[in-house]
Image (cartoon, rainbow over all chains, first blue to last red; front, top):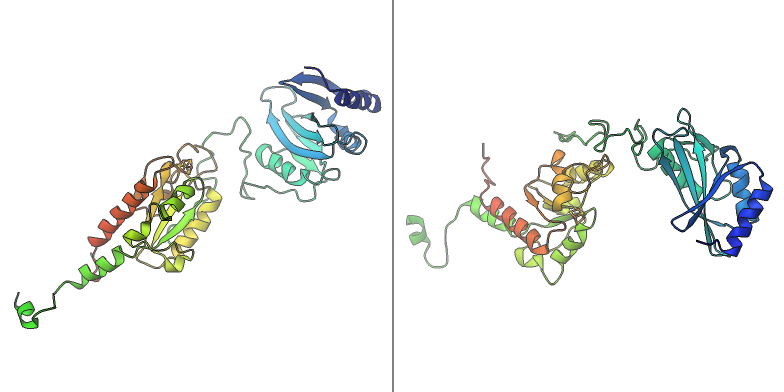
Length: 168
Length: 160
Ligand code: SF4
């Protein structure tokens, strides 16, 4: 698939602006992916939003690349409403302490998306304004979408309500 | 039938149990616990086409204090189960429970860590309905089963 001219120029500018920080650029299933250095994600995000007009952060999700070197991946799904382009930006994180800077200072929408990624994969976001679980109980001690997590969960890890009411 | 002949025309005798059960079984007001897609069929069950008012389940009561039958329609997550149990505990006795659909009965296709595999893990279910989603007729069938159950219960004397 050919890149649209606007997306091509965006990627060229990104390469120019952040030499050595772009690890990989490829296309798959008609979408364009850019893998960047995890330490520069906030700078790159700000540049993408302010200069290249990717104003709409449509989604953030995690991936467990189980048994690969950098096990975790965070993917940012960006849309430019002006150019009608979609761009996926990725970072790879190591298994021991998956941590990346939060992009909430760039896109406010990232708040809940990053909480979801934290909830499901245990990837931490530095400088997140409200770093809590979003779906699972707050005292839950597992990360359900990691590959080693059993399908039906850990028996007894989430409490069911008591079947004898307190008054009885 | 000595007593009836003494009372004359226009009277009949019955047991208090039977009378109370007759009244109860024809006024089983549902508490709609719509959690997912099954709730849509539950609405059809109450709506004019299937019209559950014919069976005395006149109105859906959104207050647990005014309802008799809880219809759990849809899959129930662990987090939600606490709210459901709380509502159930607020319903006055006697009360009955219908698990509507595959999800409420067994977890259904949501075979995963977040969904309770059947609401009977924390609720005393009286009737299960199969289907995904069950047709409104099936819900009416479950309601009629519960009516049958009510009619055979001891309501005044304790059944111990
Ligand atoms: S049984 Fe089917 S229709 Fe009902 S809640 Fe489950 S998935 Fe939805």
